[in-house]
Image (tube, rainbow, N blue to C red; front, side, top):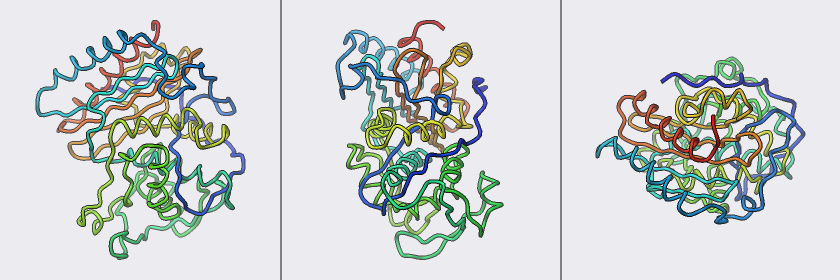
Amino acid sequence: MRPRSRPPPRALAPLVLLVLLPPVGCDRAPEPEGDPGSAPPELSEAAKLSGSPGSDPRHAEELETRLRDRIDQEGDTIRISVGLLDLESGLRVEIDAHRPYHAASTMKVPVLLELYRQAETGGRSVEAEVPVTNTFRSIHDGSSFTLEDDRDTGLISALDGELPARRIAAGMIQVSSNLGTNILLELLTPDSVQATMRTIGAEGMEVLRGVSDIPAFEAGLSNRTTAHSYLRTLEVIARCEITSTEACREMMEILQGQEFTSEIPAGIPDEAFAQGTRVGNKTGSITGILHDGAIVRPPDRAPYLLVILTEGYHDKDTGSTTMADLSRIVWTSLTPSP
């Protein structure tokens, strides 16, 4: 499916100096949307109240029925979970939202969140230089491993040198750099990421190891997520619950630069982007797994958050089409035309 057109990603803006705490138990998972320098939109009173029932329950029931009808078209071999939270009205829809899936690259959002959580009061700016290495230690037995390749060519070019942590984080999210993920995860530690997930009530998002840590994988340590926990992670970012507004803005800016937009963003009309809608999202895919989670910000209203997790698609394009259809159903239900 053709990705929907979106405003081109901006160059990474200069950062306010933030600092990294020593890894302790809290982490963040923000997403970038909106123009650099603009604060996240004010939330309505309903949106500020966690789980506030601001919408007509019949609307939620009708929307859930439409989503389930579309999911049912995929047959018995496909598993799909959905999490939706509208911060404008308080409407929430969850379909099989506590079913665990392999997290794939969705686990990179908690890593981003932890970077900025630690940056709030610690001793290192997110612009501080971080060694760029391709040698990592397994969390299972301490053995060394490397990655064979990576999508972030700039990061590869910087091997054995240094780059700012924010630059590494941008590659981790926007081109899904596994190398950048491992560099940051060794800096932050999986234990710290996990502690933050527990703190925010997203225990179903399990970040236990780096990418391609085969000894850990063979020992049964796999990164997993649920739609509910991924949705909760995005909610923490959208509401700036555990970071400052400045840190939240920077995370949203990074997420908005996402290059993979064939799922949730593809269900939003081109005209909506032209009229100011902004989307920050992070996908995840491996064989048989295709996920996406997004913060969608139409103009003149609070955002809505949407997570779609799938398992069983052997043709990625078919899965992308289904996910875009589900996204379109949500868009048309929550927003006026277009």
